[in-house]
Length: 99
Image (cartoon, rainbow, N blue to C red; front, side, top):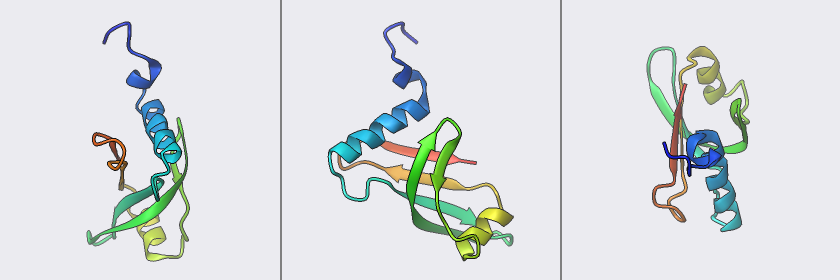
């Protein structure tokens, strides 16, 4: 790591926030959409799109109905994966998060 690297280069959350802000300013449609993958207790996987509402040092925030299949999967099987793709403006601008 060089001394010339900024906080955005070292901090993945700060870098992601910058990418998201770039996408918003570029008016990329649905820039806040992210794929959310979960697994039911029996192991059956499911992917659906949700909207990212907030991000900070604590993580990503999106809203869902806890009574829905997605909500039940999230509460019963905690490990999950999200994927945002900002490729329209930044070819290397994808972000994957697990846990």
